[in-house]
Figure 1 (cartoon, rainbow, N blue to C red):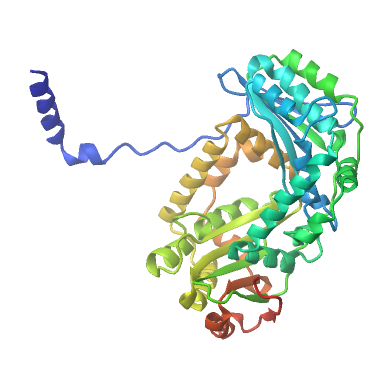
Figure 2 (figure 1 turned 60 degrees about the vertical axis):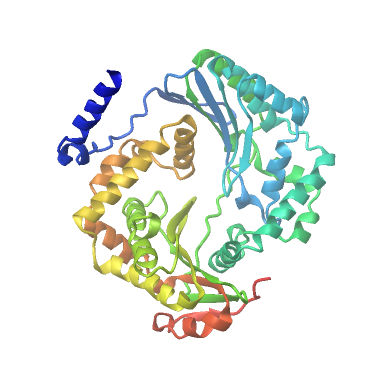
Length: 467
């Protein structure tokens, strides 16, 4: 009898009109983010702490962000990475295994990482262990042991990373592009040599730490459920007497405005790696929001214009992309694609053509509406975890952005017009100021690329071939 009833139910469902099955209600428009329960305090030594009441799960995330990274490498490329890796190797009171065990006892895993301008130490733990987590983060920040025995291993690991990177056409292109765009700025030196890494000493690591770590450069972010008085007391006790330290480095990179092309030979390569870069508005600029949405529509999403042409219409590339790399007081826009060798010149011409089309052909309401929904949805997802939200706050503090950047972001995105996106492209995407890098088999692609009329006014820069 049960089987008969089930069969009848299946037949009944199958007999429903197609409209009922195929037309679900349209999704609602994402809402602006509300930063509820937010409070920021400053200690006497310059260190700041932001507390966020977040979620209902009895967990808390504590992340300390220090305003240093590769921006402070100087001539010693990746010394920031070496120093950060050494932070993981224990403190004056705990060995590396003891650090790991302590974090595990608290219900979390310690995370330490260096970026271009920010270095972070943090972990997520059970709410009852919030104060202990704060003490552990402070111990790693303030009391690194820098054991000499671990430096050779860390250097060897980074040397292997460099060796692998230099076999990748993407890394080869990225390194060449950075050098052309930023020159002798630390951001122009993307990779060290293996020989250079081998010269770094424990004194170099300690010097980097002493010159770049301190309370004035540090901001602690807390999100979750926690006992605020107990956690604040723990943070004050652990960090209030930390030395103020130096101010943050203020050295924004200046992107090249020369129209230059670098061709790098990679004999026998089945694909060519194409990179196009030009200066972009920084996050604090009024043009940043329309520019970032324009970027998504032009090349920053799988449904973007450039992807539709290169992948769907012509079949030249699988996953072309465009992106914005934001630095403090500066930003760089890049469009990239790995394309079949025989179609390199046409693919490059197509990419440049899509840039020009963005200036003259504003998106339709339907086209822009889809991109708005996509970006608004990503925004909601990115703030749906404590780590995501705290990363957003750290980004805002790095760039000096007000709280409304976060709380009114969705509203401001939906207010953008098609013409604003095209205007952003006209204002910033001047190909005559762009830097291009192509890595591929120049025996097959070099002549056709050089002959492109779009590059008639460009300077072709010579350089070493890919190893």
